[in-house]
Length: 211
Image (cartoon, rainbow, N blue to C red):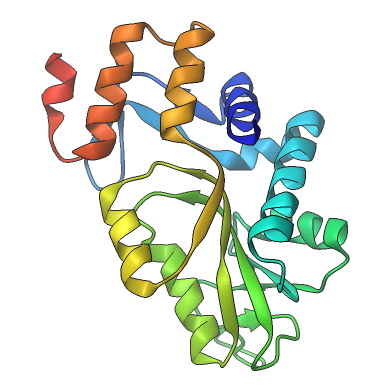
């Protein structure tokens, strides 16, 4: 099962770090029992291979009409390049904002209107930045088939935004699978699973810390 393999990989290299007893503080000020840094997957040869194979398989299975892979800046760029190589496809990426010099590009790489693309993203939480990339492409006439991502929290806000924008996302793994694996392999105690799921479902409600 792809989701379980990738969950094990992410936990093994601390790309996803679970700390319900000593929560992290996000930039928004929200206290979180989970921290995710999928850039670490690039530094581990086996995990990187598993992740890129999973992303490539997602595209072949769920987006067979894909003609080009587009990465999100900056975390999705390297993954998009590797996946595009595996699939023998062209690749590009979308900047967070247009350059203030030269040709003032925001889309890098030759991506003509009508091209069918899949966006590669490392992490989906509330999906805001990911959907900004999709909009940039759509505004330039590109046909976005959907997104392939490494990990998703499955937060309601993110799911609602994706549904409203009619953008399909398929992730290599997700929080529900990961917490099950984390309990099985002793990363967290069984009672911590409830805290993590409560946080995911109610990120602004800090009552999980008293559970």
